Length: 258
Ligand code: SF4
Image (cartoon, rainbow, N blue to C red):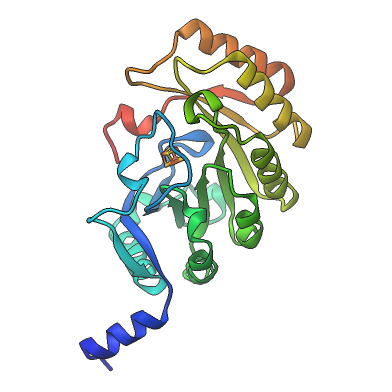
């Protein structure tokens, strides 16, 4: 039976809502799963301020931010998935017919931890695999939902770009994801301010958890881009400690995708 407007708003008041900037279908543009079709849920609000942020509009709650309940987001995600079903067909050898992946992104999605505790089980019930995109600075919050995630794409934030260091948090975060047996990889955005010592430190932290965790060096494509020879140097230095270090720009930017 349809709910009246008042009943609906009463239900909404009792539920947790999350500040949501957009829900859309696209292809993953970063990291080792680039090209994977996904539904993206972008939450508003962030706990860091990076100089190169490409989602600056989502750093804070704005007039376009909507406060949505978990069932409302799931309904929209399912609608988008059904609309783009053709794009999610997998080759037969994958053992599954379709890829049903939902990227939880931001801003910083782990700021919405209480909401995620309700939302992620619903996403799993709908058959979505959860792909978490995070700045990796809130290990305590990751611990509360790590079991519900399949893939964790975490950033290491460089002090040269964020004005603050998160080495301790990043280490604990990576350790938590790895201990939980999740497919985790690390991304570092490279700008002209990135320092060799930051790359050395990052590689040491990753190596202490596992040399096999992939590290993606993501060169900026905008006006703060660094020199090519520095990027090559960063890669070769990190590759002394780690087994899988790749240089990869944001693919969605190259193709003007969302
Ligand atoms: S952590 Fe991500 S969303 Fe937050 S400011 Fe940095 S790049 Fe932007």
